[in-house]
Image (cartoon, rainbow, N blue to C red):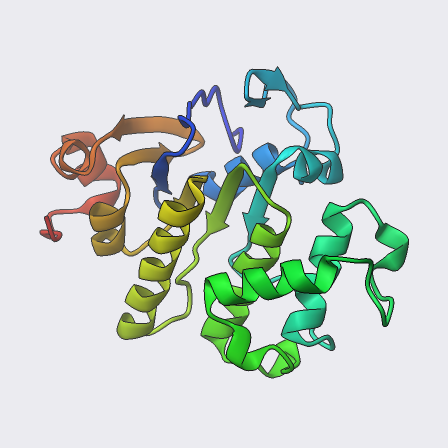
Length: 236
């Protein structure tokens, strides 16, 4: 069975969308194909009308595809500020200067802007390894933002969080989307969050698109109910 089979989806510029589906549906694989972590056997990945399927993961990042992971991906022995300065330096293409004690001009200032944007200034000198789980996830998102993406992919941004912490995280994500006018796509298993935040929802099942529509359309789609949602009522 193919992990992703004939999936064709369009994400309009500036949209806020969710991708949902049961475990093994192909959601993370879909993100891996877009970001360049996996190479597809066939098909295209179009960014602003240009096919990037033959571009490397690094090249796609430079072109504007950013991603934050289900498990935060950062340098654990570096502070929040150092992680973000490394990301900004990478965005500038100065890979050899990533771990320099004195970063290139403007890097520290840009890292500070991103920290302020996501609300991490109060822990800027704390090593990533000892941050709270929520702040580690925020740092992962901040690293992606430091790369100045046009498209931001968030793989389960609230994974492992309690109810209150999940809502704080998703409200911060929604504010970031509103402020930065990004094309933002997130994978999420909490359906109350999905139905209240996403304007469009895509449902994957066994590597194929099962449904696509507004929250109301997805909530009332019998195929989606049978395959994933069940009969439980979700918030309107």
